[in-house]
Length: 180
Image (cartoon, rainbow, N blue to C red; front, side, top):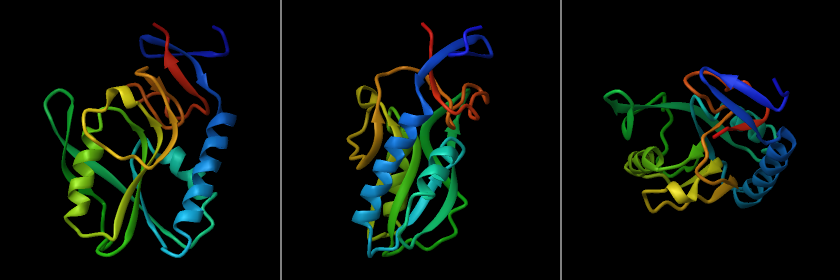
């Protein structure tokens, strides 16, 4: 098998975004966040599982005083998630009057982020912004203002750098897209 391809379950994927580009874009986001939150001491909320690599690399580059918490989202489900957030799991911090930055691996339809933002805003934070590794603007089904985007991509199925295909691929250093 070509070293630039991987097989996960029944699908093959080819290298799409190399780790060096990912890190360069994470550096740019960190610089922007460091500048814009310089005197605000933000609380970063990393949405697990997919954002763990993005979160780790971003937080190593955040130089301002801040806090981080990890949350999971429970969704209403039949055979698959509908994207309707039922509950935020793991949020023990009081976010009232805090500046909150949600860290996501990918925003595609926007269902999950939209539901999360609605629940967070009920807790009256000073501000809430979203930082995402990847954004699929052509897939958005909600009017979302995602302030911090490392990279926009077309509607391709991608894995690696925290993103998975049925549990596999999260550990890959690069991002791969499905071979059609």
